Image (cartoon, rainbow, N blue to C red; front, side):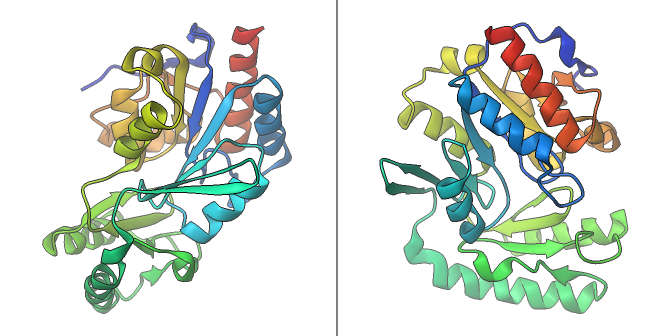
Length: 263
């Protein structure tokens, strides 16, 4: 078990890249508050590159990559990376788009089984925007499911040979060996030209839920916003640091600390 997170005040490294989860890390109660959006602009003004790393769907990620003050989006838990630069949308896919149809058919079987066996669950309302995964709502637009129901959903995905990850709002399942971490490392090295040493010294990852655990394990500068506390007992790899505030205010607090270190 990793040790308890330290206060964000103890972060010392000058950060040049911020990778961040979206839901309940940048958002607060499902919305992007002014403090979070302002924080993204502050990072841009200080020439600190920002990449959103989310389970949200391709349709959302296209919009964010095009219109937000960021340097790209990793979406559907690592299935792709979108970057809008020089008036062109660059797209990298971790899983072959040729497999979408066959994987969708397999995910539909899983969807039907989940809805039959856990009737209180619901497919995420953003599913129509997705290319690669199936998102099962566990609390976003429905009353929260129990831990047992959530674990049952995960076990159904895994029984069919799919990966399954728990976020603060969904269980996401997909076929493929990628995840948030594998795609993040590939993009940092191949799109931005960083070495492993540079990633560890100058990159930071912020998140709030169990599907961020592989990134907390990898990044020396791994930060949890305060609302991750509810998940800490189940995480083998905890973030190295934690903010005083939750969600969007926590992201604002983190941004202020990063800018302080870069002055």
